[in-house]
Length: 92
Image 1: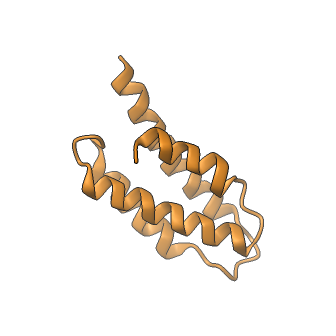
Image 2: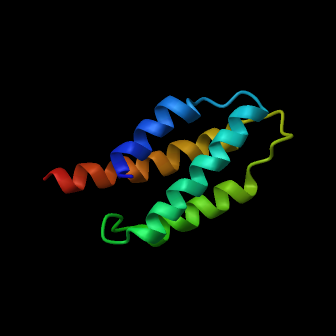
């Protein structure tokens, strides 16, 4: 897996914005996958500790029974932006 594949998974599998419990479940799964990637590939994720912490907090705080999905969507955008920023740094 690569950061580019994580970003594709975000677009194709998670498919924000989250609007239901199924979406929250997919978001939690994506957060966990990103966290494991950051743990296993520290050389590819220069801000790895920040990504790991954000993923842990986001997955822990995602409420599958919620009726307001704003916080999950905000967390998704935040983690996605961190990964996207890494791809931009490595292209220079």
